[in-house]
Image 1 (cartoon, rainbow, N blue to C red):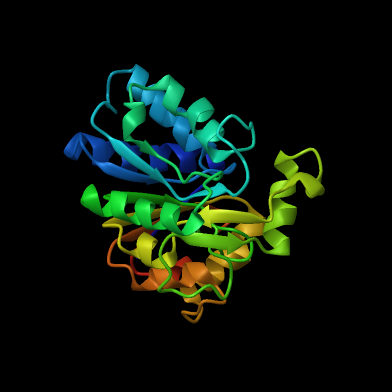
Image 2 (image 1 turned 90 degrees about the vertical axis):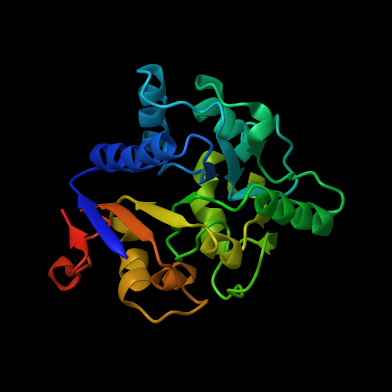
Length: 251
């Protein structure tokens, strides 16, 4: 595990984009696992800039998103398909046929989940998975106490997650209570993982993910077992860490 602690959100976003860009330069046909929410927005803006500057190319890239709200169609402005299109895909030269996001309107959820896993395997697995982290330590929409061995599946969202995500909706009543998410096992199969975190509200989850016991009660703690994971965090998110005790960390 490596911990990259950076002064602020803008520099954190720039560093994360550099890691993704390096992956694409080394392997133009990379398979990327992508995240949504407010944290990766700055990274996506930096990737768009790098693309416009001619530094990276997305033509051969395949993407798999972590999750999608159950019950929202792709045209809904709160869907993660809409988010990805507006904040990244429409600004780059990615082949939309290579974009994979769970179908929140699928009639057969079990089949949707199995097909999603099959698609990831058929692409050779995820080369680089981008993660955020919830205040309760969730990654993707894998809430506390979800089994580590879970693959892509339907999840019931915790009260904390619903409250946190309500800022994106007109009211908390509009927030979906279920989602389709890659499972912990799916995430752990990625060859490389980068986790982004910004702000003091994430500091406790980051502390537990790095120092704490590996337990489904704090889903991100399982990343301690991953052979190639990088935490890219700002100083506020790192405020509870003793970075001098982490040999692989640096500022």
